[in-house]
Image (tube, rainbow, N blue to C red; front, side, top):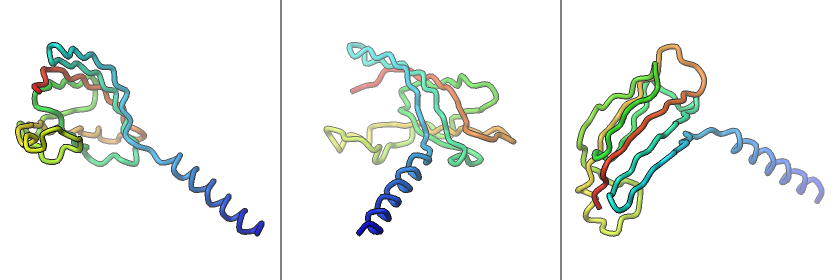
Length: 130
């Protein structure tokens, strides 16, 4: 019985440590929201773990938002404009209207020779129509 308990305890501790060491993309967000004007302004410091870096990383953003890159030495480029949204991963009250949502697709180009986690800062703002 003690051996089983010790095995289960060891497995639980090792599993917890393994999950604790796993890294995810992290967003440090500062936002100003003006609901009466349907306006949002965001500063987003994004940390991408080294294990998730490839030659490039892509993301989408509502096309109503204007994006500016605040990070020197890292390029963030618009690669597709006004892409029709499919499943955007969030609940919407009227599921038939998400086809009206347009997204812009961006690429973060990883600097040649970069090592370690990549930290970039972007700003985006605009009017979000409801």
